[in-house]
Amino acid sequence: MTHIDDLPVRDELRGQSPYGAPQLDVPVRLNTNENPYPLPGPLVERIAERVREVARDLNRYPDRDAIALRTGLADYLNRTGGVELGVEQVWAANGSNEVIQQLLQTFGGPGRSAIGFEPSYSMHSLIARGTGTRWIAGPREADFTIDVEAATRAIAEHRPDVVFVTTPNNPTGNAVPAETIVALYEAAQRAKPSMVIVDEAYVEFSHGTSLLPLLAGRPHLVVSRTMSKAFGAAGLRLGYLAADPAVVDAVQLVRLPYHLSAVTQATALAALEHTDTLLKYVEQLKAERDRLVAELRTIGYEVTTSDANFVQFGRFEGPGGAHAAWQRILERGVLIRDNGVPGWLRVSAGTPKENDAFLDAARDLIKEQEHNG
Image (cartoon, rainbow, N blue to C red; front, side):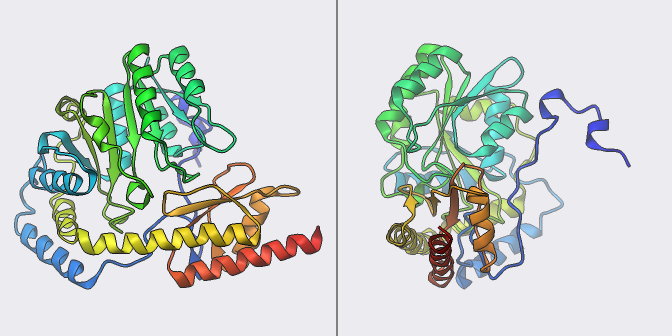
């Protein structure tokens, strides 16, 4: 049987592993930052109605420019983000990962580079490599914040074509202040100028506000979003961005023809009709997230302040470190995420019952460590 190493794969892809979170058949799965609440019945019915309407014309290509969907997304951002965006400032694709891919195809590529401040969302570096963009791992502090002085030095030194900032950051959960984004943007403009992409996949769960208002007067700034988390629509695969109209025009140079199916557009439009209901689930998850942070600290764990729908906790040292702790929690029927950040694990906020099961396992782990200690 032929092995991947026997194929003429590009050199920068050799030895790499595909992104993925292994799913296991256990009672509680809190490892992929999914919204644990199923879509409400009225929304499911509305999706069925909208899909039924477009199904009559599936012999035709969908709206290539997704005007109705982009208009709906702009309305949502204007209502919740404190901005006034037109349809020409919004673009949508199959998940925020395709949004990132299109941006890197447009502004990155062979002979160009991108920087991100790690640990952060690993798909940024993977998509960079996939588009032939050289990846640069920028610095973070021990508490996972971005040191503005160190970050601006890195931008000045490497002069990247694309700068990634994830806020709230995955997997650590902490948010990045607006003044940090402004400082990095200004440094990026002095260096190249460069595109700055702010990944706000989890912003609806934040204690603070979106950075969308920073777009005004900053034509090289992009804010990317997703419907996978707050909208509870991970299976939909719908991501979008807000930026200067010229950026939206630019990414259309690399998008595939008719990249968003009629069914995807119809489903997303139905979800936007139920925004208020879906955001009530977000409020529940924010409360559960805050409960996880408080109780984990009470139990005795160190916890990174979280503005996302997940919590990073630790620190795990000794034999096996974080992975051994992950295994012990898994043995209690709870699957969380070992992201490879030394000494830390990540748990997604689930339903109250799921979170109780996790906290029970976390308490048992502390007792076991104390007994063996």
